Structures are given as C-alpha cells and as structure tokens.
Length: 326
Image 1: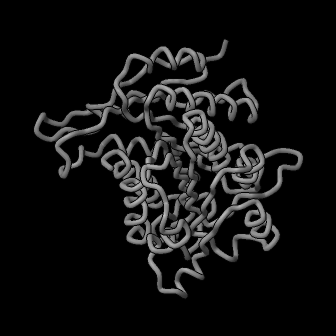
Image 2 (image 1 turned 180 degrees about the horizontal axis):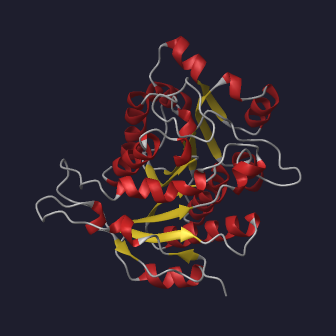
C-alpha cells in the first residue's frame, strides 16, 4: 500500500543556532509518515493540542485550469523560509508544531488525493489540533474547507469560510474539477456554508460566476469597490459579516497568494499588479485570528519558479508565523 504522507527533506529542518537564538526548525516535532488516516490518528491521538503542518506538492489542478505551473515546489520553499524563522520575540510561549509531511500524490488520481487530504485534515481537527496547509493548487481549498465545515457541524457549531483571493473560484465542474472550482464544490457539497470572499478583482471574474455565488448565499468584496470606499480590508470584512457576528466561531481561512499585488507576490500562479499590500491584509488576518476560532488556514498558489528572491515564499511563511503566534 502506498503511504498517504511522505517525510519532508531533512535539510529543511536543519538548525545550527545557539540556545539563545532558536529557530522553529529546532522546535517542530516530526511525526512518522502515515500510511493512512488511521495511522495519522494513532500518531496524533496522544499529543497535546498544537498546529499540524501538511504540504500539498501538487499542481495538477492548476494545469487542468490552464494556469502557470510551479506550485508543486511551494510546500518545500515555504517551509525553507518558515523553519528558519525565530519564535516570536513578543510571545513567551510557543504552540507545539507537528510536521505531518507532504501528501504523497504518486499512484493516486486527483479525486483520490483530495479525498485523502480531507480525511487527513479531519483527523487533525478531531484530535484537537489546528491545521496549516501549504499548497499546491487552490483546488485543495476544497478538501481543507469542507473538512473544517463538516468537523464544525459534528460539534454542533456553525462554521465560516473566508477566502482571500483575486478569483471567486466557483467555476462549474464539467469534465473534471481544478484550481478554479473549490468553492463551487464546497457550496454544492455543503450548501448551507457561510462563505465570504475578499480581494476579488473585476478583471478576474465573470458576471455569471458572481451571480451564481451570490445566488448560493456567498458574499463578496471586490477590491475596486473597497478602494472606491477608501475602506480598510478589515472594515470591509466587518461590514460584510455584520455587527452581530458571534465570537470564537469555527473558521477556515483560505489564502490564495494571488490576492496580493505582484509587487509583493510575484511568484503566484496568476499574478496581477493590482491586489493587496501586506499592510492591507495583516490587520484583517490578525482580527480574524483574535475574534474567530480559526481552526485552519491554507496558503495556495505560491509558485517558486516564478518568484523573485523567494519573496512570495517568504510572504507565505510570514503569514504562517503570524498564525502560529495568534
């Protein structure tokens, strides 16, 4: 039987720093590569709650959507930057990091890979851990988000999914799904899901797709509208969610790196000069982490072969670091 997970390269976890200057690489606990969801359940079951890191070195969904390739390299390069970071100097405590490894895509077609990803994320959530997913194509936004939605419902709680993205990603599934279909699939699989999308750009989305999403109950903020209002991203999200949003609501945050301007994220599968600046994004992101019960985030569509000075991988690593110390 082919293992579901494979270990990451050991050189990503090398740490030569002194005790007074540690790195995350010296703090992470590497779990044995799991052959199945049940193996992962056994590995995680006795561990104290922490953050489970899972990589998706898979760009098949991007290829099927006609996008630029390179995102299969992203989990490795984001980790390269992430594990070199120091623990936050603002926080006396560090959450426990569990490195699950990368989804093994060999010998499985894309539907089977997604099914396995959903099961692995659900196991981590069931065992009380938060998740950090590193894509790969944004098609993995479906297994990540649907796992959180179904987990929250099993707890009798109402979930929320927030997507930061230039694209709606609600294209219909015709002969196959791909990186443009994750939230169509989510709303068709779990039609009562509350979905909010921010960072959308008018030149990236069709009128028909916007109409479909809004008819399915999704809510959107387009960058053109936000900037016309001279409104912060945080203020836009708060307006969209409404004043009576319950705190500590179980939430999944999906972050397609192409929501950022190519000035900050040149290494994106689909990049535009328009989009977020980090100072737009981080106050909104940190408000979500403080106000909501964010049980998982996914960072997708980083394409290292298109990057400049690892700028995009480093931005993704900073997002992961902020999540770690939220």
